[in-house]
Image (cartoon, rainbow, N blue to C red):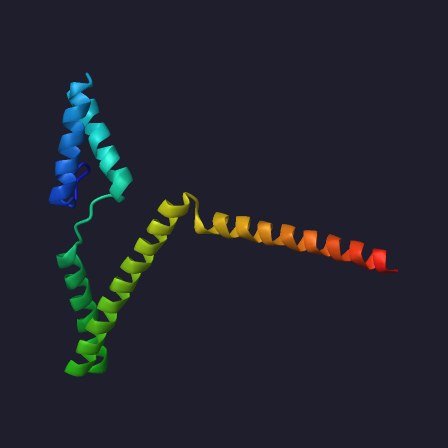
Length: 140
């Protein structure tokens, strides 16, 4: 795919970009600047082109299935291999999508969020320990 190719974008994304471009032109931006801003905005909001490369994934799964069939020598094995390959690609897609939505919601990477919560828990524990020490010293 050549640089700047918009074929991987859905019709809705293209309409969004067109609308953003028109409003940027109305505000006095040049043609090039308006287009650049429009596509940058669409990419920021949607995370790039949403159209899936169905043909490419099908070809890849068929190739891997053929290889597996040659090795094992049966149709059943070929079918299993295609199922496995499609499941793997589907899992990858859902995992990356889940990570993206988590990042969008928190605004931070999952590691940073985990670090922060760990710090909070440690601070709570420290506070509890200090209170327990005070109570123990009062009793004795």
